[in-house]
Length: 418
Image (cartoon, rainbow, N blue to C red; front, side, top):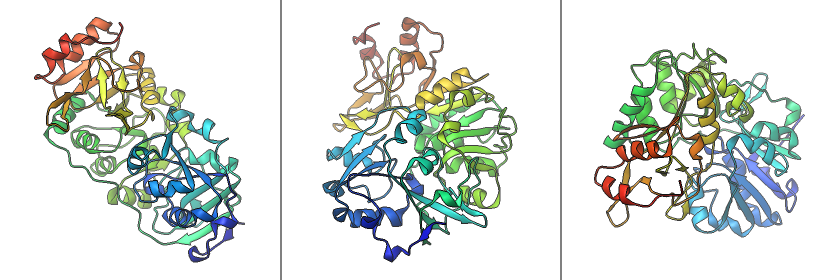
């Protein structure tokens, strides 16, 4: 049986060894009681490492790098400031590789769990945390009675947890970003591509929210995603999503991480239509390929004229991630009727107020998605289907969806080697 420690009695220096690496759940699944204590007690730990995912909280701060070596797969949320300060190292691997690569790196796992009559639920995140339950030397669980007890495809045995810290605290809400007219124009193009009966994967932010809003007239949609967001819950309550035609896991949405709010938590508490799953299920090519009309909708920072996608860096700063875009694009390409979609505004205003094109002659950062994996690129200007297209065809199709004021200069620019 796990040892039970009250929050005010938690002495992490007696549990975590100098030099060890700690990992915890990301976004709303961060165990804030534990991570706050970790930062407050960091000087007593003798120097440790931390692998962090998306962070919405001040626990990930450059000031804490005096005793903690931070590593992450992404530069989103609070991680952006940490990277800007030179205090974050990046692990640039596909999401599907996390389980294999992290198992040998993580010594201590910190979890936020929900209590259940049978024991514990993962609550808001399973994903790459699941295999670490068994590979980590020490597992400390913050058991929060305000976390929804979401059912899962895998379970937690009492023997998996070494220390339990009982708490009662509100779940952090996801950051809100209101869609604008450009987002809504892109969303209309994307919605026109999505067939009834499609199985969706989508991310968090203003553009994904606009796309989900635009799907309100669709029917029999399903969900298989790394991240479950509030818009999916609203479509479920409206009857648009019923998970009836997925081809597998029918009747419920499979997700690795939940970043929804009131509607999502209500579904988690009152139904079993959302189920948490490990990354080995949400991102596996064999699973994705078996889904009906798997439609992967992701965003990017820029796309070059051959179809390469940069989803990681902007202006020299690490602001995104390799993430699961390649996993999902390949899964959609292998799925019967699948659609690998990258959606982004054609341009943005730079610091000097000038328009900066997102369709570029050559990438200003890494190729997060190779041109061989490019599928359908969507901007507010239209749709460029690159599947099976030659390089010259791709160039013309991408120029057609570039910003009209920048299209002529873009056509004259010298691109990458072809």
